[in-house]
Image (cartoon, rainbow, N blue to C red):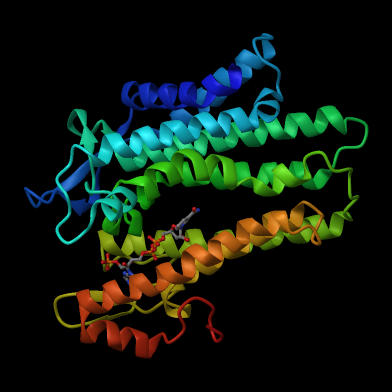
Length: 357
Ligand code: NDP
């Protein structure tokens, strides 16, 4: 029963905390289609995340559920999250007006509404989805690690603990920089349908930790400390690329004159609009995607089982997601910026990997 109820309960707790806990009001990047005004958001993701994890830790320490309960009930949890993801998709898509030129199934998959918000922006559908997914993923990671410690108690894998530590950093820092996310493709170009709804409520919390699903019961591979340190270094190099690029763009979009890390931005311009060609955005047109791929590979390697294929599904997923996304984004930007984008492509010819691709 715990397995079937837990995921919906977490989604409800996150929703209630998201609406109730104090938050910081900010102006976003996308505009309300009817008024032309920038949408406003109330951000409190990190607080919601910490309180929810605290509630889980309290429930485990007071004996209400075992620390590895979510591992033991993982399939039932994934099943009920699936059901919530489907109901959420239908509830978002069916009452909204169809998108012109899209059929019903395309609408169902991609969604109809661009940026639904409730209670005057107190709850935003996209911010909620990412927060609910991140919180349930963290709970899964912690509970899986607890299971590993229980079954391999005498000789736990430091790699598994490193994996959970790095993943926790990944989620916490994402929520710490929550505002930056408002300037990304998801907010600019995506609608809320199955892809985003089911993706955040099911795929994100249950697939992202696929490496741990595969290795949690495996014996300690005794990865040498130097290799584990190299994995951590690789992970943080990826983080610098992804976070650096995203922060540089965020700074630039808010104030195109403002320097970033002490460097004045260099741009190409048509007199009206500007595109960054310096710093991270001068290395390749999506160095942030390379950062994301690097972090995913480092996480996989940290488990100390490079010959096992299941943990590689995680970096492979990023490859399959981000390569077509880069092409889509290029097309969108070429249409939006015209010759200015062509000039950027001439100045920064590589799509993702500098000097290679
Ligand atoms: P970007 O943050 O790269 O955003 C692309 C947009 O930025 C473009 O559409 C354009 O929008 C603007 N832009 C592009 N080049 C420039 C430039 N040189 N100067 C100024 N503006 C520019 O892409 P995403 O939104 O896809 O990704 C955001 C982050 O989220 C990345 O780090 C990505 O890896 C990460 N991500 C993480 C996922 C995960 O599951 N962990 C999944 C997907 C993405 P405009 O119209 O505003 O000019």
